[in-house]
Image 1: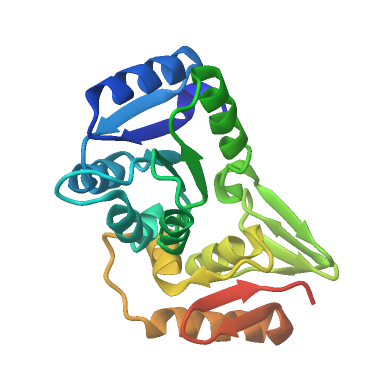
Image 2: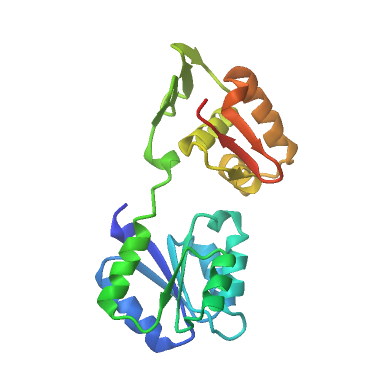
Length: 229
């Protein structure tokens, strides 16, 4: 992914920090957005869906730990990389941050060049969604062709209804990754379409009948994953 397409949300109640950090990251070519407290961070994150959030801990109105937990509870922001950027370096503070769903912890003060390096390192974890990146997925004896909307298994071509295909493609795009039910609903059916939770179960049952029961595993109380048989 090109830097100009990467969105970074900076959250800090100190304007100087936002200005300095924002300036150095903009020089690297990233899109920079800012917020000054936890409430603003949540609203801005929902609006722009950033790739990375650098989040201060001690802020007015809502602190960073609470904001992180609320962001992590939103399906659309489940894959966002969150790093705390704070002067709080105590072990208990870091543990609270990780428990809330943070991916990393950067302690202030830090030199701009070092911060840029840390940001680059964090973004290496960022992989473009294979649903957008790939048109063909090959897993063992299964080929999933999104351009022509068919699945081939052991040289047999299988044509699926669109939603079954999209569900299959989503799960197979990241084998062994557990997709939560709310994420599946949003990715396959869209946030503007209201469907019942049983809808996923019905589609999974049909996929098991057509592709093979061994490929689709239920993680009780969480969701589903595609496993390599």
